[in-house]
Image (cartoon, rainbow, N blue to C red):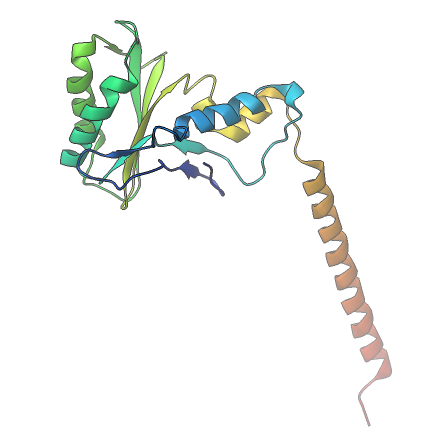
Length: 207
């Protein structure tokens, strides 16, 4: 699970996305478990970890389906009651919704669907200080979602860079050394080119 650049998404594992959604196989850790393990490791300054250079956000998607309302309703209806099993009544939840170049699944429809599914569980929708966050990611290929505890505080909205800076981890010294070596090589190359150009001017035009 992971990603590069400004925004990496950890995709759900196992199965083909159908009407009821696809989830990780029983013998494979869910993406949210893998991401939490990575964040827990980096949250401990004594672990010796370093700030990752090419990973910013890691978005775990435990269940995936086609990016359309009917498929989302079916997948969420099967997944969420099990994801919230054992959670006390009155516990706060909210949704973190992100859509990328898609209009087939809107936040208002997602929120309505979630309310209908979670109403029998007697959970409270809380805009502020929600203990659980339902992360929903929509793009032209897939809709993925998961239930995350401590999304805003402990996981820093799944931003690994923010977590590492908060606990004071340093950037990888080897990467810094590599950058310095590359800069030195580049400076040496520029100096060599300038020297050759100066020699050519001093020699004058060929007879």
